[in-house]
Length: 332
Image 1 (cartoon, rainbow, N blue to C red):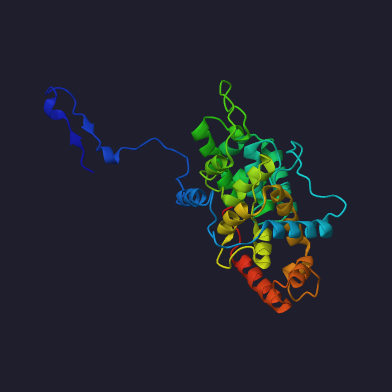
Image 2 (tube, rainbow, N blue to C red):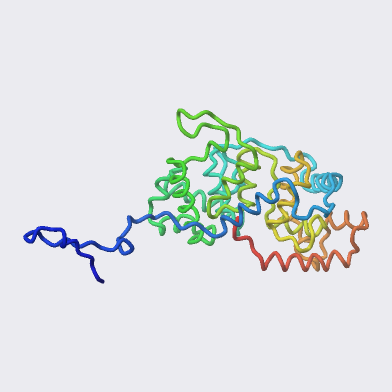
């Protein structure tokens, strides 16, 4: 490496001082993860479909169809206890409750832990994380060796990836706001002298999507369960059933399906319909396997409405189940 000398302007008895070219100077280390190329894509999609569906000419579901399916699922799964939105509880396990806790960061972490695993496994992972670091000790989590976080959440699966996402999320929040808090999204002051501001749903969604590891589904769950906003989150179960019901075009992926359904499903049905579709998707063997011989209330509904024949339903069921299995959710 050649070094530039400034000896020309120095005294003949002065030591020669060399200068390292600016391009080769070492910069202070910054452990903030590089920005994901997915960030701009997420924000562009969110901005594009805030007020208009990606499928503006697709007429389903109508308000009547959404209400019919809601009522059918209530009768099938909760006939004696209709779905009622519960306020976030500090006693809840944020992974098991889809982020139904008051702390926004905890809600995001719980939703990340719930990706691609069972409710029981993600609940254990969140409990182990709390046991290892203390509940909502975000500084402890972010400053710990990654391996310690991985060990704590191992039971939830994809532990290495999720640990990186959680630590990256916390670093990004601290860099942006100076503290480990997103409570301004809940209308609380972020700093002692701040004036509380009630943000619009689309403003909250836009900020959440700036963080790597937070996709439209995770952001929607935070809106729905933590912030008590009317948002229609589309997870694997909701996506699969929406395809079967013909509520989204066949070409719609999960992100576009959510953008479409969030505008089509009536606001007052979003919470209950999401909860019921997830419950049905997990419980109904007839939905999971066309050849199981098990009954399905949605199959009966479609036959009675003559929306599809039994053969069409079975073929579509097999196709959708295969597609969903291949495209497992990985972006939240």
